[in-house]
Amino acid sequence: MTEEDAIFDASLKKKKKKKKAYDIDAALAESDNLESGLQVDIDMEKKDDDDDGNVDIDLDFTKKKKKKKKPFNMEELEEAALDDNFDLELDFSKTKKKKKKKKDLDELMAEVDEKQDDKENVDDNAVQWLGSDRDYTYDELLNRVFEIMRDKNPDMVAGKKQKFVMRPPQVVRIGTKKTSFANFTEICKTLHRQPKHLLDFLLAELGTSGSVDGNSQLIIKGRFQQKQIENVLRRYIKEYVTCHTCRSPDTILQKDTRLFFLQCETCGSRCSVASIKSGFQAVTSKRAAIRAKTA
Amino acid sequence: MSIQNLNTFDPFADASKGADDDVQDGLVHIRIQQRNGRKTLTTVQGLSSDYDLKKIVRACKKEFACNGTVIEHPEYGEVLQLQGDQRENICQWLTKSGLAKPDQLKVHGF
Ligand SMILES: [Zn+2]
Image 1: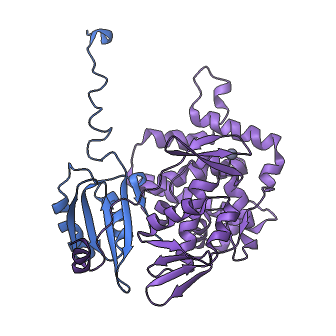
Image 2: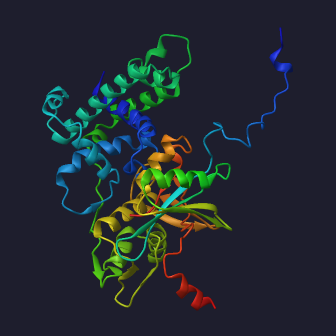
Image 3: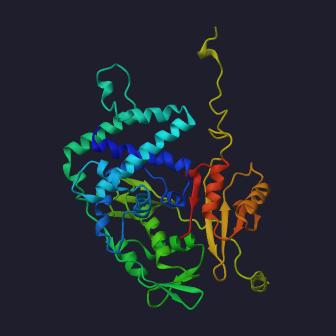
C-alpha cells in the first residue's frame, strides 16, 4: 500500500467515525466534501509548524490539532513512514491509529456493513478491476483519479499551495455588555466581501444584534472573546470565501435571484451558498421592557 | 413464479417518509444566545413535528440537569429551548437517541 492510499483511506474513515461518535468540532466544521479537500488537507498539515497566530484559511485546523494530540505517541511515530516533514508523519500516525481502532470496533460489534467492507477493500484492489470483467466501483475510480493526479502533479503533494494569511480579529470588550470588533472593515476588505454580508452572518451566528459605528468598528451586543469571533470567521470563510471545489480564496460572491453564488476565479466553478438566516431567536431581554415598548 | 416487471411499484410511496423512518429529514439548527452575564440559552429549531417535543424536553432536562421549555413559533414550529450552553449535550443526545443523524445537525454560534 502506498502512502497516498493511507491518507486517502483516512479521509474516508473520518466521515464514518463522525457518524458514530459525535463531537461538536466535527459539527462546527461541517462534513464537507472530504474527497475534494483531501490534497489540501495534506498541505495544511504541513504548514502547521509555521502557525504564527494569524487566522489562516485552513478551517480544519483546530479539528486536526485536537485529534492529533490524542493518538500521538513515539511508537507510532517510528512506525510511520519516514519523511523529512514532521507534521506529515504525525498525520500518518493518526491515520494508523484510526485504522486500528476501526478494526477493533468492527470485530467487537461484528457488524456486517457492506458499504464499509467495500471501503476497506478499496485500498487493496485499487486497480483490481482491470483484469476482471466486473464493474469498477465509484471509490475505485476516485482512488484512481487521485493517483493519476498525484503522479502528474508532484507539486501538489509537495504542498506548494498558496497560503492565505489574514490578520486576526481585534476583539475588545466595551463595558460589560458590548464587544468591539475593531478591524471588522479591514477584514471585510481582505476577504473581498461586503461588510453587510459578513455583518449579517456574524450577527445571525452569534444570535445577537450590533452595528458598525463611525470608526468603522463593529459593536456587538454581548460578550465575546477573540477566539469565539475567530471561530465564526473561519466558518464564514469556509462557506462564503473559499471555493467549495478547489478551496481557492480567489472567489467572487454574486447575488442572483435572491440566492448567493460563489464564483471561483481559479477553477471556474460556481455554486450556490447557504443563505444567512438567523432563525428562531429566543426572548432574552426583559419581557416587561418589550411589553412596554410595544404597548 | 412472479414476473418482476408486472408488479406495480409506486416510486413515490416512500417520498413522504425519508429513507429511514426513525430519523427526520431537514436540518436541525442548534443555536446559542447570550443572556445577561455569563448566562446562555440553547435553542433547537427544526426537529420534526412527528416527535413529541414535550417528551424530548423532559428527557433533556433530566439528562443535562438544566431547565428547558418548548416554544411554539408561527414560522419555525416547535422550538426547544434549554438553559445554558447545551449544544454539545444536545448533539450527542440527538444522535445517541437516533432522532437525528450527525450530518443533519447544524450548530451555530461561537
Ligand atoms: Zn475553485
